[in-house]
Length: 199
Image (cartoon, rainbow, N blue to C red; front, side, top):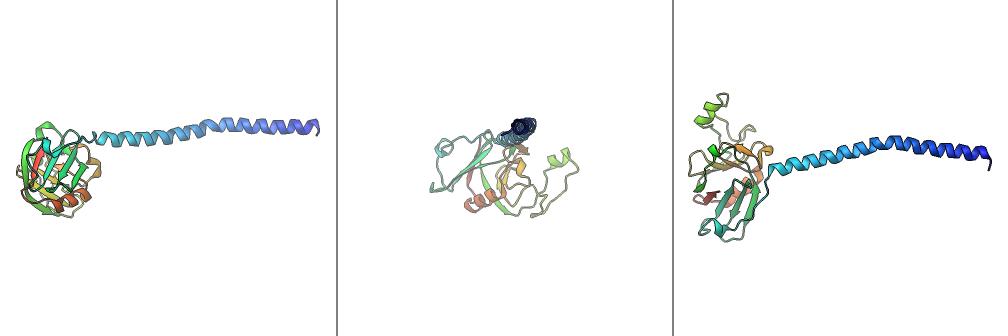
């Protein structure tokens, strides 16, 4: 093999390595950007939900007659136990945006509403006069979603949601919002009189 072929091969190998070295920071930057976006997305979703706390129904209710719902404002989750204890559900939910809108204690389901109509409360309209007077059920702008469970406290409900980004956030005027598929399942299991506790 001649000296010129060796030098030419060494030159080409060196050139390829140099080109690769120049391109490498771009590849690394692309990987770092993708990793950053993935981590950022994970951080955002973690921020939405504080993390479920395990609850035993006995810590909050004296019995499960008619089933029981626990709304946990701290971990931003709703828990449901059926009367026979065969069904236990735990779902992330939206919670009241401030302590002023938060009411704690015992209440119960007083009305089940399929495709509920939303009528903003007088206080909501006072704070934001641009709110519509009424939004019919099934309208995508309806913040009650596909189902609502009215509680014995006036204007307080467990309901579906119009915007999934609200789940796990302090985003409501006192209600607990669930993904529509979650509230639809709960709606089928709950009866009028089902006990509810908000902590």
